Length: 280
Image (cartoon, rainbow, N blue to C red):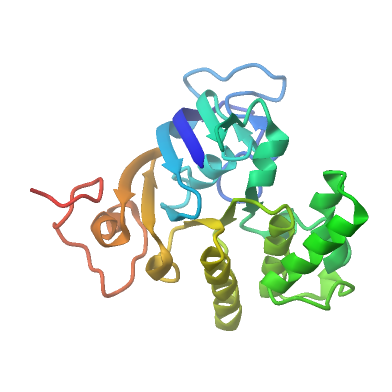
């Protein structure tokens, strides 16, 4: 389980913005710290504003919102890639701040642009990178690599060079790299951006299969058309705050108001309040 309590992330002028993607915060960055380590004042950019949230094991959650709404910053607190200015994050009952290794084993992260996390020349070497850094025996590393590649339909391609892959194939390698850590939850940030239709279908099929096998899935997106049928729950963000949280059929009515694309069969209506619950 992922549990956030009162999480706020604020970035000051000149703050460390090493992230790939639309929101600040890649690397071990504390929100609210500038490059010299001082804390940003109230004039900084408020990326996440007092969010309390829990995500159960095996749950398929969509974090939805427009660009700049705080989605990426929020999910990167799940495994310590961004450390909150205030508030706490725990994974499986353990503080992320106090045990980063455990958090990063439990929560796998796939960035919006897979090039931001592909570190090796070949598929096999890249997928092995995480388990190698855990100091696992070679036999266990090989087992994890083979299982992860099978999960994304890339078995037998360990020696293929990353530079020769299509965008969809790189996305699948990034997913495999996260899966090799055997996480409880897999977080994918805008996984369909820039992919053609066959690649989108392939990635979507892999995600669906992983969820069916028991992995918790968190998808970050501004467009629900691909993932709406799969979601157990939709959490909508606007200006860093949770404004929608509920099952898809209830939450969907409020999402166009925060610039989230929804399937055509779910036009906006007045049947739910801003939390996604039915109006009295």
